Length: 237
Ligand code: FPP
Image (cartoon, rainbow, N blue to C red; front, side, top):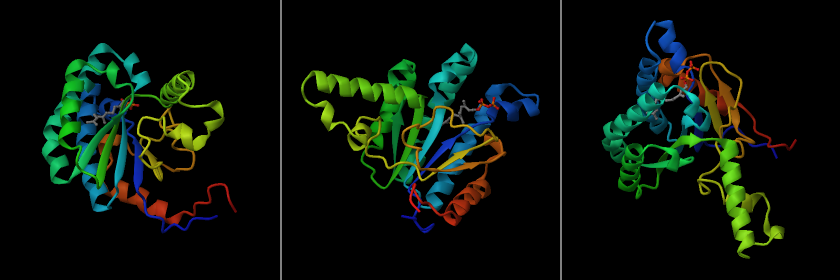
């Protein structure tokens, strides 16, 4: 059945790409691009609140990002810590719960400590969620789900006949979060890059050439408005 464009956007997922290119264009180190990118995150969270979007998922660090130089990885981890420390009051003021998806145990101890604190301090909020994908890979998430299912089958808590799409999705990192309605990717690449492979099956995609550090409220608004113009059929007619 065709869904009318009036269907309210609940969940927007974003691939924040182009920090490196933004810095290169200005003859700056990549770290400056990431710093500017962190400011965009703050802008987008404000815009998301204005549009009353319940869930924002940000691809902040992928399983592939570990291959970057040691300096860039540690710079990103410090930036994340600064962002969390600097935005805890914003999250509280806006009653936003922080969550994380990904292989969190891979993150440095200090990053995990700050994350745990912010997650705990915001865990009681129910209306709005910021979900950070960290050391995240869509294939890794599926593999992790399969391992948990295999363990449950081995322990006779589950029988193979019980496995269907609904049950499978319960084994993902954040099973209660609805699939994204819209996925935005900045800086022009037409790829999903191992992001939310299961959950993006029916999401609308919006790719803009704007680099993430330049992405502003107007760009966000354009993506949202375009979403409402589309008709979603989910395979129906
Ligand atoms: C992609 O740009 C961006 C990342 C790998 C990291 C995203 C991180 C931030 C936006 C800042 C910190 C995050 C938070 C939540 C505070 P790229 O480096 O791949 O850019 P390029 O493709 O132009 O090289």
